[in-house]
Image (cartoon, rainbow, N blue to C red; front, side, top):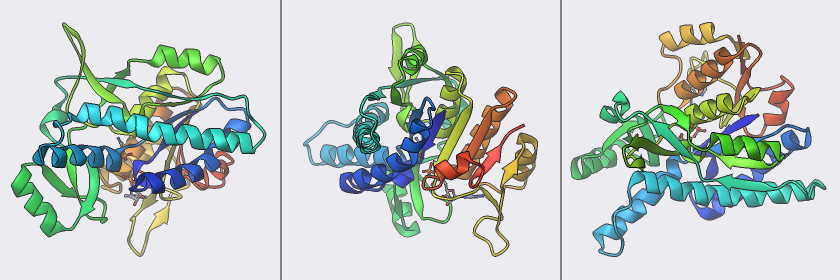
Length: 307
Ligand SMILES: Nc1ncnc2c1ncn2[C@@H]1O[C@H](COP(=O)(O)OP(=O)(O)O)[C@@H](O)[C@H]1O
Ligand SMILES: NC(=O)OP(=O)(O)O
């Protein structure tokens, strides 16, 4: 089972994040205790933006070098993975399980150097700004900012599609050893293959697509995409909003054609879920909220996407 955990659900400070991952652990541990092999793949949108901005400010003040975006994702994997490891371990012990190792795997995601996404930034990172501030920042820095699902304006960066996960065979070995694994954090550190080996690129891969790729490569049965809403909806945020309990990839395509899912937020989740459901008969993808993850596994919450 691969669980994709939204970066926006992790808070904005180390203290907030520690608190939030404790809540995440409460949702994840019942799935482990039920006997599932688990890989947790978390987002890093707010966190990678924060790390990048901190280095930009440090550079302006002459205190730090500039930090490339791939290195910022590597740092975010350590920062978030460390908190998740501690929280999941503590929750396992609290439930009488003190012999399941929890580890974070620094993960590289291989992307195509010619992916058209490099020419069209779409992935929101960092904090939320009002329109006036975002437009000022755009003029000052040359970075692109867009409105993000009615929550404010955010910087956007290139987000190529994952082609493969460099460490997937090692992940298979760890699954065989019954370890709980945190991998593909922040969508993985994006790398391209060159004549001199793999090199990081300036991008942030969508963790929902990375989790889907990971789930296929490790032969998972379930892809759980956990975010801030209980279910995917049509007419989201409007008076006639209606939650979707179950949909096939074909039904999802029809909703996508009606622009029902916001790009950069719900759209990639639905697309990743459909890709997983289509990849093999019987595979189930569920999009739901963190709090109700165990209920979603019983079919009592979440949106189920299957053939
Ligand atoms: N059709 C929709 N149905 C449900 N939520 C939607 C829809 N369109 C946009 N959203 C928004 O997308 C959010 C999930 O995206 P986001 O916060 O970017 O994900 P993440 O949890 O991975 O950080 C939801 O919390 C909701 O605010
Ligand atoms: N990398 C990524 O997809 O992060 P979010 O889930 O925070 O958007």
